[in-house]
Amino acid sequence: MQELRQEEKAKLDRYLIDFDTDNLPCEFYDVVIIGSGIAGVYTALSTPRNAKVLIITKESIEINNSVLAQGGIAVSLDQNDSPSLHFKDTLYAGAGLCDETAVNALVTEAADNIATLCLYGVNFDRDDDKRLSLTREGAHSMNRIIHTGDATGKEVCDTLVSAVSGLDNVTIREQTFAIDILTEDGECKGVLTSNEDGTKLKAYFAPVVVCASGGYGRLYSKTTNPEVANGDGAAIAYRAGAELMDLEFVQFHPTVLFHPDNQNFLISEAVRGEGALLRNNKGELFMEQYHPMKELAPRDVVSRAIFQEMQKTGSNHVFLDITHKDKQYLEHRFPMIYKTCLSYGFDMSKDFIPVAPCQHYSMGGIKTDEWGRTTVRGFYAVGEAACNGIHGANRLASNSLLEGLVFGRRIGLQVKENLNQIKMREGFKPKISYKKQWKDTDIDVLSMISKLQSIMNLNVGIIRSKESLCTAMEAIDKMKNDVDGVKVVHTQFMELKNMLTLSSMVVKAGLLREESRGAHFRSDFPASDDKNWLKNIVFQGGFQNA
Ligand code: SIN
Image 1 (cartoon, rainbow, N blue to C red):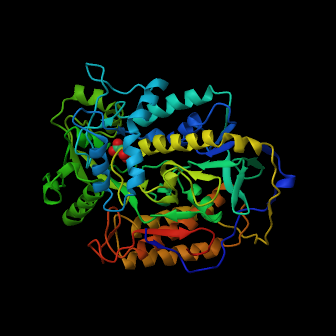
Image 2 (cartoon, protein in one colour):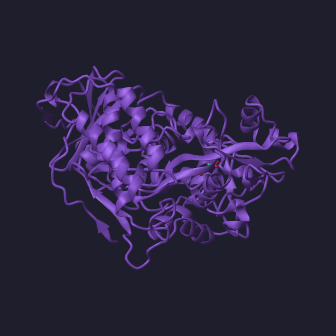
Image 3 (tube, helix red, strand yellow):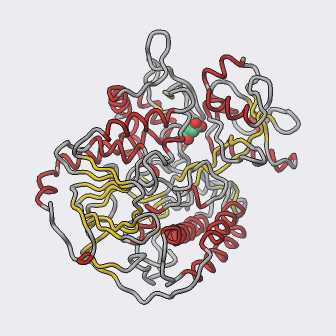
């Protein structure tokens, strides 16, 4: 793997806040998991019942990105399908950048993990013969998406949270903000946390810490992600010296409702899987001009096609047309989407739905191997927070919940294998402290966050260029200077610092990748550079200005 490491050697602040573990309240666990989406909760369920596990989440347990997943989970169950076809489709969508070992694990372990979900009681839709119903999404060559109506993520998360809540070995702490992981001699020893307003610090010590805190969609104001998804996990990992990879690959979902009062509501790709067509503002079909798979082309292709069509016709949206299906069918197959569209005045059985692309998923994140191990000993990452290479430059639809399951279980298996060694460290309290001379400056955190999000929307979107990326970099650098060395007084300020750390690396990676590949499209380098290309752009943690 060709990797690029930054030359800048100025050290980043190791921690966001002063502390001394000698003076902090603390608790001891075998495993601490940061995040309560499918990846975090399934990892907890996959650890042995004699491991003492803690899940921390900065909001309440049901606030996460997995809950919002509509479409479903990809798994090759059809008699004409196979893990090798799923593998091939994943690699095709990933535009040459997937890690084949990790993808192989994903597709071959999919069915087993889905069987486990069924045992937990997840109520997937079934056909008349009681077999799991399979639908299609973009870039899949077969029908292989299992689903629960259009609220698959909620059904899976509700079931798993109820299972984990019944376990004696798992503790859940909500409204608990992970400030930083605690490290000693380059090894992870636990997590430093605070309560909601940042006033009460606490240390949770554990030899295994798993980051499942989600992606960095909230670097953009136009996103389908919930407010919690601002890339805290990647920033925490980076300060602790872990590597981050593929940050330039940000996925824009093609079809998000476009309405003056709502531009964040996803209209699942499964709607196109069930036959919906895309029309420009003149009512014309256009996808045939862009890709032979038309509406079901890879997601990056469809988003770019819509973007170009909007530019050509001078419109801020296109239309999704599923009027050939009747009301009864739509109300049953897509109950939430049907109801939500209706509440904005669109009856899907009669009206075209205005849609536009919007940020949806982060392919990049904390670099891991195919067992979820980061480059910091004892520290793991899973789900959208991680980057193990399965998505490459563009994630195949409905591979993300599956990723949380497959790699969550793999982390659980490792905890099982190493439990004796883990247990030997029970109650071990490292002495870690940090103190720095901070400035007391007033910062308008909320206005800085919204300024950053607009900069990212405008300059680091579906189509970028050196000029737009440099504009973003200049503005972000200025904001970083404004907050550098300023004492954090509440968690929102910590989030802002995390967002600035991460956005500057997203932009830097975008500048370094002088080609177009998958979700990263440079108008000044419109082709893939298969000769000189940088396979993965990796940032070594711990330094300023990556
Ligand atoms: C969707 O339902 O379109 C989203 C599914 C995904 O992000 O994989």
